[in-house]
Length: 192
Image 1 (cartoon, rainbow, N blue to C red):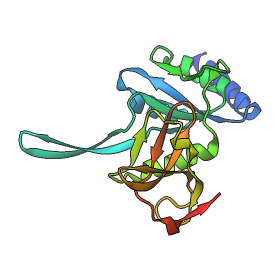
Image 2: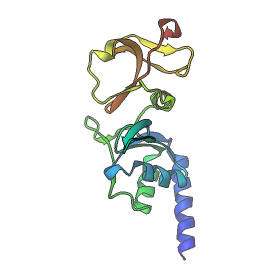
Image 3: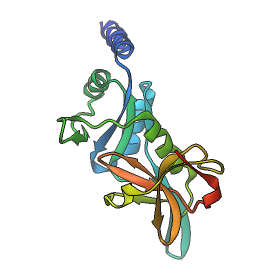
Image 4: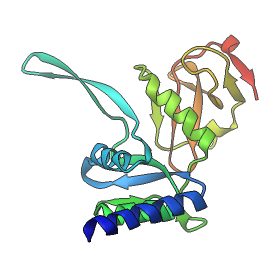
C-alpha cells in the first residue's frame, strides 16, 4: 500500500513539473540546515544551490580549512511552486523551511535564470576577494551594465561597482543580496 502511494505521489509530482515552468526559489532554512535541506531536495531530483566559501580557522595552534555556506540559512531550489510545496510537506521540511516573500506582490521571491546562473558562476569561483552584499545601495545600481569577456567570470552580466578601491562586477539577486566579483581589468569588460 505504501509503495502504491509513493508511486502515485511521484507520478503527481512529474505531472505538476510538466505543467509548470520551473523557477529559482530562495528558501530560508532555520538552524543552519541548508546543506541538509539541499541534500534531501537533490535526492528528490531538484536542482539546488547553496553558495559556499572557504574559511580558515586556527584551533590549538592548528590551521584548518573548511568549506562552509557563505550566506547562512539560504538555499536556492529550481522547481515549480506546487511541486516544491508538495515535496516540502512530504519530506517533513515545512517546519524549518520557508519562502522569502516579495512584499509588493505577496508571492514568494523568484530569481531570474540569467541572474542565478551569473550568481552561481561568481560564487563557485571561490576566490578570496569575492564580496557578498546584503544591502545594495541605490547608488551601486546606477553603474554601467557590462558583460565579462574572459577569465573565470566569462559571460557574467552585471553592474560595474568599486569595492575596496577595485573595479568589480556586481550581480544582484533582486530583493535579497548581491555578489561582487574580484578585480576585473577594464579591457575584459564590454557594455551590454
